[in-house]
Amino acid sequence: MDNRSVKIAPSLLSADFTRLGEEIRALEEAGADILHLDIMDGHFVPNLTFGYPIIKQIRQITKLPLDAHFMVTNPASYIEQYTRLGIEYISFHQEATVHHHRLANEIRAGGSKAGIALNPSTPVETVFDILSWIDFILLMSVNPGFGGQSFIPVVYKKMKQLRQYCRENDLELPEIQIDGGVNGENASLLTDAGCGILVAGSYILKSDDYANRIVSLRS
Ligand code: DX5
Ligand code: ZN
Image 1 (cartoon, rainbow, N blue to C red):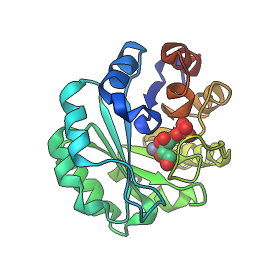
Image 2: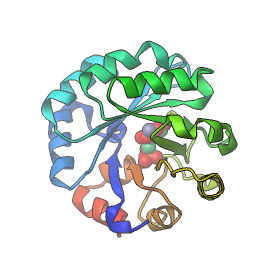
Image 3: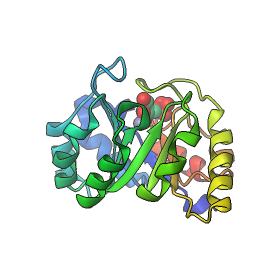
């Protein structure tokens, strides 16, 4: 992957929520490509974040593509509401549902890109049979639930297996997102390995120069 074409998706999980509008404006000016929204229900992961009312307002103040990462036990109950908002990317966890095909179809029918997310311990083979129904794969490089955790390098092997499987089966490689512990040290290794979207929360938002951090993720 050409590093210049990698997309950078800051995760708002590490933003200052008392100044959310300003944070979004600062990320736009700093060159963010996508805004990553971590939706947690306190069941699938041991944390709660934000949901529809806040995301609806975010949609109204930015033209950046939005990427909703559902870390919830019942993603099917939310999809329609979110596709109607015009969310460009919607991912649900492989581990959270058994109806992957139905859910991916619903997301696509609503006009959003459908993604499937995998926890670090979930083998990538579990999505091989779903590849033609989805637009992107989110590979977690931390255990979902919190920002600021250390990178787990299991995603390199997964990207290699994915590339190999797609090559051997004449399938188009879906866009790959890596989420968790992404920083200036692992970014170029990840893009070289095939990642097209780098999600980064604390590395960008806990710094005092967002633009500099975004540039360092691209180079
Ligand atoms: C974790 C979330 C991530 C998180 C990444 O459950 O899915 O998107 O915000 O944060 P960092 O980049 O700080 O690991
Ligand atoms: Zn996320």
